Image (cartoon, one colour):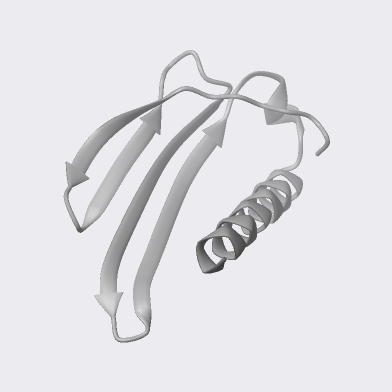
Length: 88
């Protein structure tokens, strides 16, 4: 939405070669829990990402659909850039 939001995350679970879970700290603008899982498949590595979040402060005034769309677009852009870099 044109504005940079920074959060601090702590890793709350880590299983080598399987998954990592991290959550925002209480002082973050957005409360979020992210789980990344990966596994080998014949064509490479399959990655699954689950994000659960809740906004706080002034962000609560923004309609949920708009926030979700902005987060989804940001994530898709970041993952697209990561894919490009990994395929170089």
